Image (cartoon, rainbow over all chains, first blue to last red; front, top):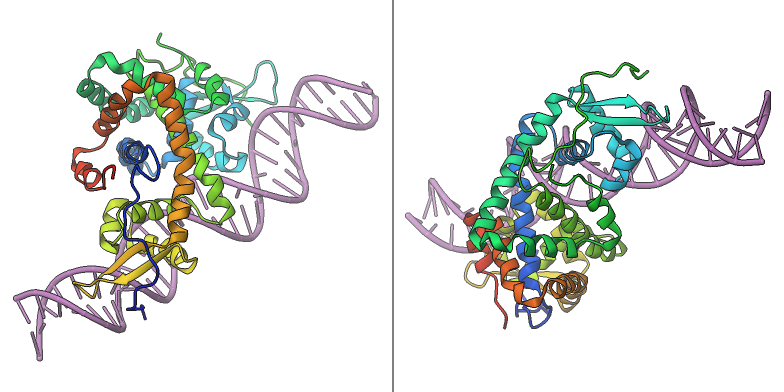
Length: 167
Length: 167
DNA sequence: AAAAATATGTCAGCCTTGTTGACTTAGTTT
DNA sequence: AAACTAAGTCAACAAGGCTGACATATTTTT
């Protein structure tokens, strides 16, 4: 049974007076949610999840990555990775090749099938970004890039910079 | 046993040649991850998760929201909400008050304790955004706001616009 | 050569946060 | 009185995280 007598509660909304940047906080939340929703729909048909997407993405961005490197980028545990990686290998999206220098290592590469899926997943996200950039004027592209990078912990900039730039 | 003979695999990295906007795609991923990591650390101590954060956030932003409204904003099911909402109520962060117009409804309000936690969670996120804006020059604030809004599905703009603006 | 360290894989079990479907209760509308 | 609506609840399930412990192959150090 719910109380009918009002307990001590707050009726005034939290606003920018109380905490700055609330507008960007919630825009960031909504933007990211919709940004991930597009690939989620494609993944669903394949019975994959967001975890598969991230793994496949980075293997495509840096073919030959080892398991340890991937764990560092994703910041998850070996066991969490193992499951999704196994599925990507079993479905022929990714292959492991014994490291030529160090035979303990497993270099991870996309197959043509895996590359194709990565591109398919990137397409709607690229479209969304392109459209958003058009709406604000393409000249502001670098503002967006700088802002997003500034939102990342400097300790991780090295990871971003290690990914291949435009060919 | 892993194969020593290389299967058909792709060694070239996926770059902007293949899919546009890859740089922003990954910056967005890293930025959002670090953005959510700050409050996650605070939540952990309270044995709350990101789900509690989102619920608490919106109840603070729009006190008096009904359960149905909250479900629409969060886009989760009633059962998913029920669990975290119950915990927030049990720990005296949120109270439910029988709707004055329609007694079937439960209006959701933060308690002082709930307001305090919401502010505590917003603080590091605000700091991160403020710092990022300073790095790009504060004049570009509206560019960021417009970009992020353009990244959201127009169907959801109404939800964003319904939240209280600066007091 | 032996010992230690490293890279990966694997087993078993757990938690959170999401899901669906079915049903109840209370209150409102027709 | 009947139908609809808002919310709560029960049971069962899944994805994707986690920990700890241990196995195997390989490389590095002593």
